[in-house]
Image (spheres, helix red, strand yellow):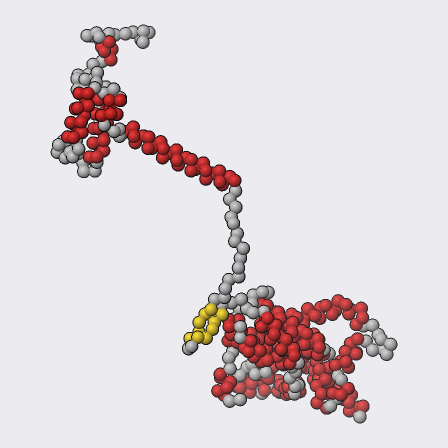
Length: 221
Length: 207
């Protein structure tokens, strides 16, 4: 920054370092510049301040009052200031319109869920059939088998792990699941009385009545 | 005014907050009255027409109200409020001068019947016959001198003399470096000095 700029800053009080000014004014040319510019500033400072008419200021303040700020208003209540939130202006409710594809998608999803539920319910019925006599009789189960089934059901109503021989089963295995499987086996067994369970395994070829298995050629098969 | 009174006066930013948050009209009036001489002095110096300067003064505050309420532009309560509103005042003045230039380009240099151009008549219009007392003469005479300065020099001089903005703030307002603003002020003062000396010599010669 040159000396004249510094002089101007000193003249307008923006540099408040008296030592710098003294140093500056030691230079004759700078001192003359300071005096000349200072004289002009003194003349300018004699200018009287000017103001707009009072009506102009009133009009501005009235306009400011008219354009009320849309901000939270604080009101003095007793010793404290309470923030009063201005009411939100009323708005027309906007109804969302769902598109036809979205509605169709929702309907399909609902139907799928319904179908899945129905199917799952049907499977459960198949896997865990009722063992009442009427059902079994309707299925063509003989009476003696029904009695046996009833006896076993009573026996199995509160079985213990020892009774079931499940002591060797790991702890993570669910006994209820085993019970369900056992019941299912009984049910299947009851529905197939002509088969003797527990007999030695007989090849299918001998089931026709022969005592020895018959070898058949590849062509005959 | 006592020292306590000065200390009790709210800052510009506090007045703005009072107006915006509690719609305090008195706070806003205080703000306008506090800075009216600075803003109006600058505008009058720029346009040299009292009615026009009042219109621009009003326009400045209308724009400021809109900006403070975020209707137009924005006002962040950081920095000096005076510097912020002076930018608005300056824009209002420049907008007017641009508009005036558009339709006065042709007319400005047209010589009238009495041989005077628009620019010759302009200063005379501002001095009413009944205001020819010495002090007012002096004022008008000085205004004429200032009006003859180059626009950039005149604006820096008006901003520094009338509004009390610092040279740094003026530089920011004009988007120039502080050295440029100081250089313009230097030429403004030097040219004024020359004009004053010439004017005095002329007056002495007339006498």
